[in-house]
Image (cartoon, rainbow over all chains, first blue to last red; front, side, top):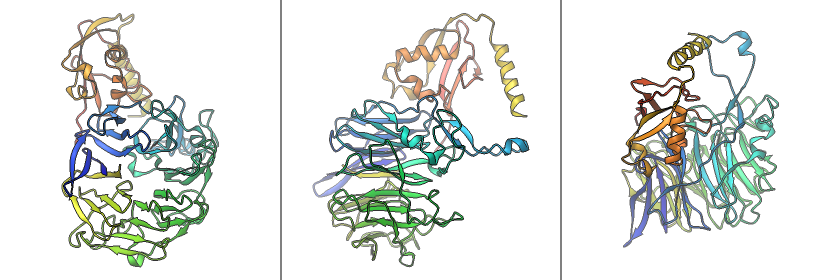
Length: 387
Length: 117
């Protein structure tokens, strides 16, 4: 088993050798790597790069990470536009200010997440707010128009100004423009035509027909930063995932707490326990077999995105969030201020691993009961995936 | 300066640089070593291309190194924020359409703009 690690300065691969997990730089030296993952069907490794100068690029390896090549690149089609608030302009006239959202031509700002469905199906989530899908193993990608033209984004903006109103807000992860992004994509293993995506900031959407039509899945969500906490849109899922063996069990670490659904995301239940430090954070991982078992790496709060009192811990539930355990054995409990990003927690069997923005990579071989450091001086870690 | 005035100013400078009926010449193109890693066909080469504008230069380099354009420009054809192109000693003005003229015997430099982190 290996761990694929995307960092601000390259791709690392961690392998177990003679009883020890050893990391090595495996490609993209000096380049920001937002996400690295293995296609379970083809074994191709995929990396979402964010070059400082040269833009966002997809990279792939068909030899297990020994060599990497540019993949077919993702580009927004001509005419793809999105609604955005007008830039502040002190010289704007009253008339300009009353115009409302402006239409912007979409250009790729960030490749954020990669996921797989049926054999040959590759999905990529992007900023601004795009879901690109391939049905030929990644040889070509197309923007999902059902989602891009969704009424919650203003409708079909290829054809004209649409309805002039968008419920999709921006994310600070957008590296420039304050645009919305898709960071979570999950495909139901039982029903490959059922996909969930999560958008920062809008909420969760589901398709039951392989991306043709999309439906809001935000019932039961509660936000704590909008006038109406139960609004259909405007939620900020930080990460959404489901249990492969029980795909109706869906987990969401949200800006406003931890949410769980046992009915396929049709209704969400808030399972935060702030008094136990289980509330704010970015990633969530769910057990492959048991949909009620999940792990989080909590932070203190949105206004203090850091560990609680300098102590790093993982929270685990085995009962759908009714109760939570603090898992601290082997993790630093003094002057540790690690922040764990949304894609930087992963599990496979009884192994769980996470990496932090301070370059620490921790792994447990017993579902989180005990932890040990794999590396302490990596670049800031963006993603951790077994594969 | 109001946005319209700024555009007008850029436009007038561009017009001053451009010559009516500007005909292609043979330009020398030097490309940052940073791109050699991603586009090996550029490694160690100083290119000569026939071009009347910077856009022509980019198009010709793309023929030699497929994928080059998407490294320096976005999908709309605009020069990426952290990329610079110089013709001789002058940094190009038109980062949208790359219409700056290229004269015969011009030296065109394509490089990353400094940014840290």
